Length: 96
Image (cartoon, rainbow, N blue to C red; front, side):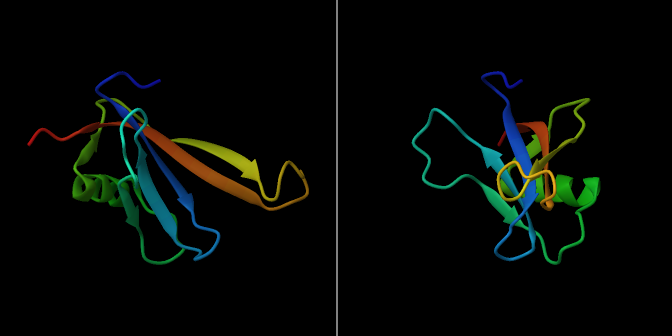
């Protein structure tokens, strides 16, 4: 759950490029593009890689947070279809 001073960062593999992308979900503001970081390659980014990406975007994980993984089926809800993994974590903006 987010609070007014926290956001949700999500990471998933882009189906079009096969590269992992991390983005910070920002609701309630006029935002045309959410802050996003695209990783090189198809290897799952490590926790340290994710922290560096968040830092580059101006965010940091909330103390004690862990990355939660969810799976979805592509396309739709076909249980025989490929699995699509989505990671999420609570983050906050780094004070400037």
